[in-house]
Length: 158
Image 1 (cartoon, rainbow, N blue to C red):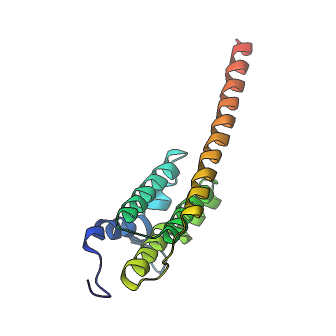
Image 2 (image 1 turned 135 degrees about the vertical axis):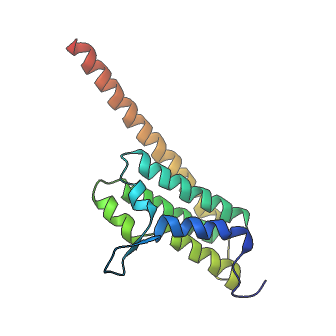
Image 3 (image 1 turned 60 degrees about the vertical axis):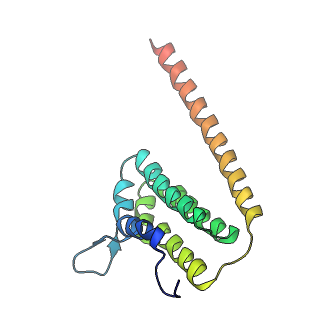
């Protein structure tokens, strides 16, 4: 494979990245945006859906041999995007600028085509996964406590 040729198996990632991050232009400006900030306007589900799409692309990139170091950075990109995007208003503005999918696609090309970002990073990947599991447990606990509070409140009101 030549130095500057795209990876044929990953053409769909390039297309999805385009649609998620820069498919549209604000008229009269050079500001590009995609479906990510639009999907993010749907409360709760929008950011989760965008995170799922980004995660699916990262999984596909993993199957095509990115190093642990690249994987660590990619997971960090989509996690940061998800966390900040979940904040009302601030997150919607952030979605216009950060473009995690474009960042990950550039990392993939630098890794695959130019041999950059080589090296193992599995310790970091495991640390991120552990952090995400703990974060999900933390969030689940507070969602459960909130649901119990509302259940008890509604029961005492009737």
